[in-house]
Length: 423
Image 1 (tube, one colour):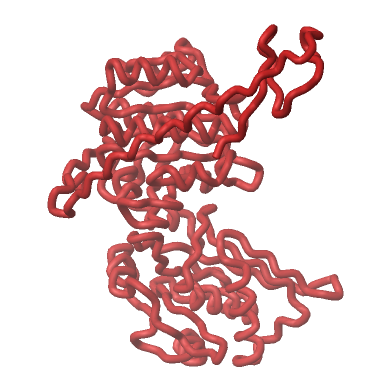
Image 2: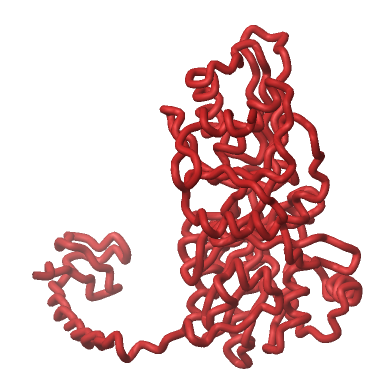
């Protein structure tokens, strides 16, 4: 029940209890009780409509190509109507170039929101890449941008970058990034527009801004450098596999798709050199033949060094412990360096066997056969375990020209693998 208040009849000053003298106008005995206003009745909310699953429109059927088969692979078959994709990567890795490559090939109506570069700068790059026509929007204020998009919506929207938009805070702030992303996600879902948001990355390599940004979007992709190549990797994807990769080569004419990554990454592989082994890896749904390199050298330090690049360092430590304990390989006084050649980063337990034989080969000084490919997970007891996609990996090995394979289907332990290698 609302409490009564008292008001001065001379000036209207209000107080919860009557006073002898009004502190506002100075009049005496001028307060009268004011009846409380009746509580406003809250309107009863309308019931939410229920939607049967059979009535839901299947957006998956309306996929369309990005114009680049490697991007389509990472997305799971192309863009989905109303999908929002967050694209991250280091400065200069080629994010803007990738957007222009897609815009050049897509028949859909594409808007390019330029927040970081001037239209003249974008035109110079577009001419170099052969982009003849592109609809540019030079606006960093969110409200005018949304008004333009609502009035004349495109089919595809590129925002380069989301950190340049002003939305409830200065550009780049946590509030601005979160509000801009939420507004563009609502627009994409309501109007069925595919949106690609370019995001800055921190020094740790993750997209800058609150984590809620990655939760709000449908897919998060990272463009990374791998030697002379660029690798597009999916970290989140509601409409396709996670961990899928697409490979490009950066040239003067732009980003060129690499149709056979196995051949590209094995092109400079040395033959007849100890410490080199070919692994059949799995990145998402894609099988790859990659070179694992190992080097062992006598350490000048009290504790030997373990340096790992491109692989999970903890798994490599496990493999080294198994080699030392189960096979008696002397590693206590050796520095061990393990590298996945080509600059690629793969987190796959199926590379354990290749790591083990590459290290063994480096220590004993005997090269592996040039036509041998390896796949398998190594357990703590020295056993070789099955891995996902074994048949797919073996088919990729055959396509890459390898004639002999060591895998969980034809061996049970790491000891058997070493005996087959030494035979």
